[in-house]
Image (cartoon, rainbow, N blue to C red; front, side, top):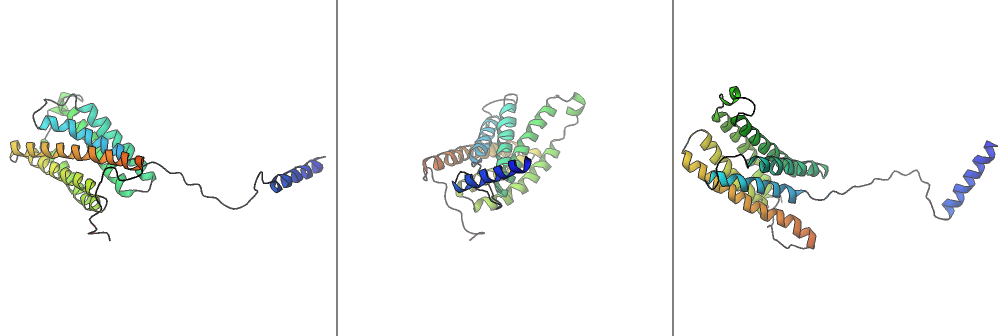
Length: 227
């Protein structure tokens, strides 16, 4: 009885294949899943974090209490989301840039927690701002070689990184007490300009593919390092 059933099943599969309902094949098929470009969200997160943080450096606002949510969620998690999705797209530059600055903003938020005594006064009492200065030097090195990479992406992104470089120079100087008033203002204005250019880059990343044309120009790569 089982042999008859097997024969009937084989005949049925043969008829289905002949009618084009199903294809029986041993060939391996690759399925490609396309992810959308996360640059718009990543640049928006960077722009928002810089925009709110610059207000404190420029003396427009005071304290950091209401900066923390924006720094952690927009500066941190939004860029981390962009990092993960750029990694899925095999975009090493984008994943590294967004990931690096996501953890930068998370670290900044944590330093504010420590200074405010969230983790105890014993930890807060041993704060040495010069240690933060060394962290800023490390990120300046990171930002400088990422600026080289941005030069071969487009001019808007390159401009963002140039202002980030200036911002970090100001933060380094301020952390070591070098021209504190000037270096803080330098960092503040560079951060504000980073935000404004970042907003533009985010808008271009959304609107250009949405309209299927260059609605907001971002500028061609410089073509210096990559022909």
